[in-house]
Amino acid sequence: MNEKNADAIEVKCRNFLLEHNIIENHADIKKRENVLNLLRSLLSSFVRLTAKENGIKRDDFECQLLPFGSYGLGGYLKDADIDVVLLAPISIRRRNFSNHFSKLLKGHPSIREIEVIERTNVPIIKCVIDSISIDISFVRLRLATVSPDINLLDDSLLNGLEQTCLLSTDGPRVSQFILKHIYPNDLPTFRLALQCIKYWANQRYIYNKPIGYLNGGSWTLLLLQVYFTKRAQFDSSSPNMTMEFPPQQQRQSPFHYSSPPSSPTSILSSSSLSASSSSSQETSSIISPSRTVSFISLLESFFEIWSTWPWPAPVILTKSIPNVPGQPTTEISSITTMSEFKESLLPIVTPCYPVSSAAPCVTKSTLRILTRELQRANQIIHHPFHSLEDMLIKLFKPYNFIKEYRHFLKVTVSSDVMKSHEIWGRRMTHYLYRLVKLVEQAPEIKTVHPLTKVYNESVSYRTKYEEDLLRQGYTVYDTDTTLPLFPGILHMQYFLIGLEIDENYDLEDATIDLTNEIYMFGREVESKKNSKDSDVSVAVSAIKRRDLANLIQRCETI
Image 1 (tube, one colour):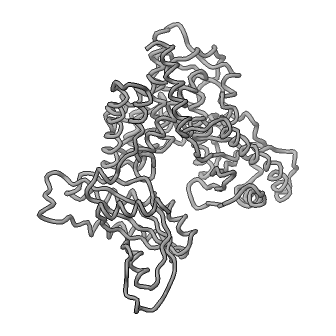
Image 2 (spheres, rainbow, N blue to C red):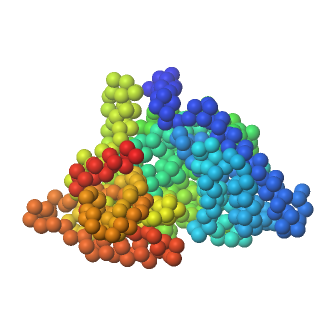
Image 3 (cartoon, rainbow, N blue to C red):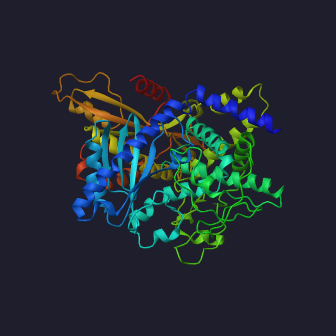
């Protein structure tokens, strides 16, 4: 395919995503700029309050608020969240962030739904501004002040960081790593391909890391590996070139409002299929080529490579595994001895220290589902269609969960209080993985398919008996009206699982007994509760296809 045709396909695809409200238009982009500017406008007040409390001079330090993740890369979908990190000097403590910054958010009339979440590996403050959800993390660096062009890939910044701050640097560092290793002129193409992949994964219900699939970061790293492969092919066709970005091109991405400053450049071998480590030596740069890869070839290669990848062969984006700053780099072969990857079925190694698994919850069932979906996409994208639009419609066709399975489980989470409903909605996505692992151990079960979409409703009850039925996962119809009235409302969430039965098992002769697996899951969930969860109940039950269709229709019409 010549370059002119490749450009035309890219334009048509971008227009398709715009016309179908999959990506944002210029007005939406401007709205996000304004949201980020509003948050940054609070920094001066935050500095003033913190300086007063800690007894330091107000002009002695600066903080920075940097976006990362999908928004920081520019590869996000319409209505996506914004992840930002508040980088603070050593004179500011985490309690200052939790107390003062949250109060500033609560005091602003345009900011609502503020929630401080502290009991987690990466504590955040959540809020909503102009209908956009924001997650704000915090890193206390051992610096006197934080420069606007800080290079987070400088490993010396990690020396002496407390563990929570170290973990909170992962997302921002990976974002800078990705921006550092993509030629600026390839960024629009990379972003468009990423947006297509994310939308496809959402439509096919394989976009959720805690449940057992991949999230935006995981899909991005897989696309980056494909980009390295394609770029190596380009570089090998020009053996005399070692291309690097000029500092001015690195410092500002075309999405200037959303990209964190990039790091000083490192030399990349023209034949390398993987990037250099993040602590590479600084060097002068030669100008970036006009473009090294087309959108359609990047997308085709993505599905072709990952639909046939020999998992659990690891995906490693660096020449060696990043290690503790100042220590020798770790050999690639040592991945098998790392605790994060000992039982990993789909090992994707994050490219910055501290190294982690980008797909830690993949099970044998969800791996089968991911592979099946990648193979389907690969067949579609290589099939001759009358038009690009026809191909995209087929590729993005929503997955029909009810049609694909005959047997289903329903996990019902019920609570009296809306706050509990919201908290357990987040928690259950992490707990559901354990139920999948337990059920797929049953010899009669071939595949356990957790649906990433969650259904919600609020249901009124008249008696204690009706409440008990609802909490156990039953639908309440007409019940005994002579019972004492005990009216109330339950907030319900339904997590759905499809079951594929092994073809060697004759279901007509017997039923499948999952009592033990469900009991063990129930015990695990109960062990996670605390005194504030007394209103929450979790029940697992079988549900017929007809009843499932009615439940989905009922929840979607609310």
